[in-house]
Picture: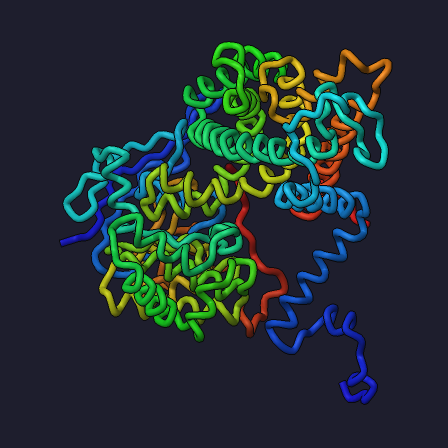
Length: 272
Length: 308
């Protein structure tokens, strides 16, 4: 059975000139697999992720013919019911650990918060769990790191903390919104490996949002290519090279190669 | 470093080392740096000293005063400052020095209790209004504006008049008159924090609104609030003295500074010291809190203080 079914998802924001649709009719299904969503900035990929979590703030509007997660109709849930699903069942890793960690709270406390929001636990057990989680995102000396504040750790470490924070309640679906774009290339691989490892071990579904086509192709099972709020191509990751849609072809052509022989790198013309 | 002269570095260099060798050295170093920042601002140090002396005087009042603050000695009434009573005596022959010293306890009690009552209320109201926005914001800030529309002293006077005279009532009244200022600050800060990424991160962990406000927003508001409360303490002291002067604050024979000035008013032309000595005390302590507050603002909030 599929974990998440999205059919005709639309997100719109009102403007003085009438509503603007930033996601217009996105449909896909997700099993316990890794789905990559790629597209340029403003193609609606992050909004799709936020809409699934019900985090589009008013005056934004979300409508869909079907938005079902594990048999639960997400659009019919009240805010309180959504809160129980958020974090516990669906989690999201955000872009930049610098802004997404509370600056005045120690890392250990912040990870513990994620658990405390959903269930009560004895203090000692909670602490042990936090330390175990830090170890599983490959942080050495977890006891020391747990006492540090976010500004005292590096970007890569911060993102691993963020992953620990989002995975500690053991969700069934993880949405990773450009989890590596704020990081150094050398750290990117590490973080991806950690996510991959945890996804495989726990068997959760993953939606990986990125603008890095190569990265997604090498990392995910299936790929959605988005443009202007619409899905223009859906294919298995290994078949990406044979993509038919002109936009995808354009994107592929714009990726620089190390053995480049082209004098000029083609770019996509923006018409909208 | 290969240089052998490194072994003879001074304590100062050791504290300010760029690459501390141990965690203890790093901690001491950062404490020393904070001290250096403070020292660059002599007014702050003066303010801190005044507050420190105030605390000491209040704690050791019975030993320093040398006389009972409420014991009357009518033959010696209205004695000018001299060897026996170096701040003179008042209209009932009480030693003014002893009364001023014991007055520190009342002043501290008022300041601390008002801060403890008013700051959390203002903080909570402001954070809730700022976080939820919409009608909650409009309602809460409307109430805040109503309180802000009236001068503090008049409002406090009205409340003490309604509650009945007495120091406890004065404290409650001043607290009621001072929370709106804190609510304004808390709201303004919350508005900037509310949209930040880490709040969304906590939201998508499924944390409830109460949880977000209490454990994620309030801690971020405290530093600016501490500064504001310290700066306000001078105002609180003045309001308390004003209430005492008007006869609705501390009641005789309590040695409250405002009430002492009020009592000395009748003799101000011939026996100036009766009203002047507690007046000095009020001025010095208020200044102390102002200086300290300014310095704290520079240390805690690097945006407002100019870099020196």
